[in-house]
Image (cartoon, rainbow, N blue to C red; front, side):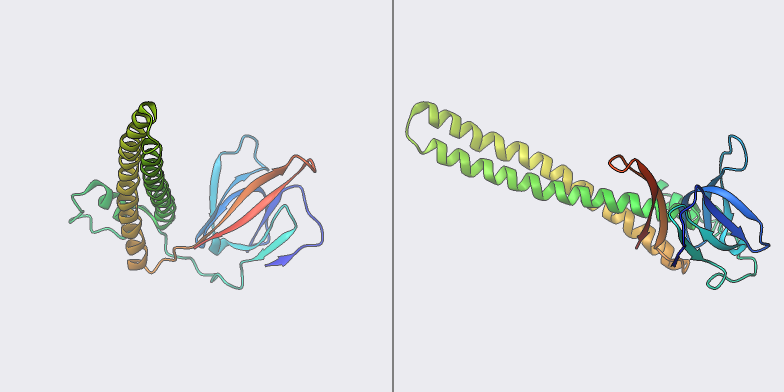
Length: 220
């Protein structure tokens, strides 16, 4: 990836036939670029295969050379159901959706379930700690001797771990469930010899400088 001399108004996709597309790039993977064609009024979201692209000029001045790393020959399409045994599809709805998805959809699925698993793990740790903290605090308050303190401390020692435990169990369940789904998606991508990583480009706005731009994020 190289830096251009000047930033420009739009992203530009330079095709291998040297035609240019004035675009708003939404997402890039190793297979295609999702974008809106700014040269067409009210353009809907569309895509172009990477094998048709020579270079990508980003709005922030960065240049991505594609021609040297992507073969000029037509890449086999990665379509819905391409890798599935249609005569022997899994009975489980999620597993069936995994084998029927194309690779880009699988990367999206993996990112979603991976993030949800992290959220569940965080919730499990946080609420377990809060429940333990409430139990310890309640016992300390109850041991101070007064009747009111005993009532408050006992209530805290009972309710805190109970609520924290329920919420921690929910977090643990989500952690296990989404981790399992993410692992199934990863296994399917590996079976296809497809990379789990992709490049995501998102628009950003800096209100302090009153300036916009793009961020390029590499997911692995």
